[in-house]
Image (cartoon, rainbow, N blue to C red; front, top):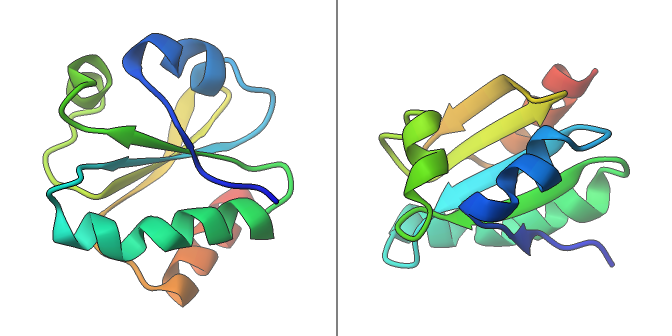
Length: 107
């Protein structure tokens, strides 16, 4: 069963930027209420979308990636393909809107 995996700054280039296919990164924090609301959706996305890697990156211990992508609010979702951000979403998102976000941008 696919799950969202934790990732750090040091793994980001190899696991996300150099990935063969699209990657969804959820930038979150344990103290963030909205982040906890969408956390179960990340596992759902990983299970529902073959070929899409899903990672969770905690904001505080990973300042390089957070700074590079100018993350100002969390949760922030980055959809990355071939090293480029093809879509991003800041804030809470419903399951149906998340599904549409993925479909529209991966189509």
